[in-house]
Amino acid sequence: MTGPQAGRGGRWDVLDHDAALARADRVFVTAHPAEPPAAVVLRAGEAALRSYMDGVPGTCGARPEQAAVEPLRRLFARHLRDRLPDDPAGELHATVTAAAAVAALDLALAGWLAGGARADDVAACHARFRAVAVLPPPP
Image 1: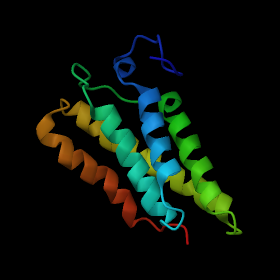
Image 2 (image 1 turned 180 degrees about the vertical axis):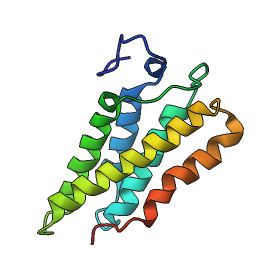
Image 3 (image 1 turned 90 degrees about the vertical axis):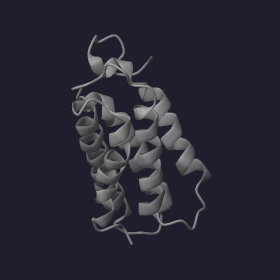
Image 4 (image 1 turned 60 degrees about the horizontal axis):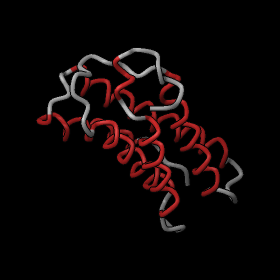
């Protein structure tokens, strides 16, 4: 594994942050230009969440550190800014939406991991992440 958490020895090390970033990036790159930015960021967050949840035995109780999720927030914000070039408040919307999506992902994943990372709880984890969708999206 590479990235900001590589070699730190914590249980968060077992998660592949580069794979999560790559999956999220792929969603943005392949999204239709007319797809609403909020929908794309939710799909990208779900892709990252699935990546984190794939094969994480022995991580019960792990909690992501800010350094681990910061690259994901920057990726989301960059792609959202690119999708809002004509919006005078595009940078603000991109920054706030990216931060909200990553915070929701962080909370959902941390709760799932703290609960033992059980397969039975995957749907609830995704639902907890998707709750961010009720927040006001950019126009």
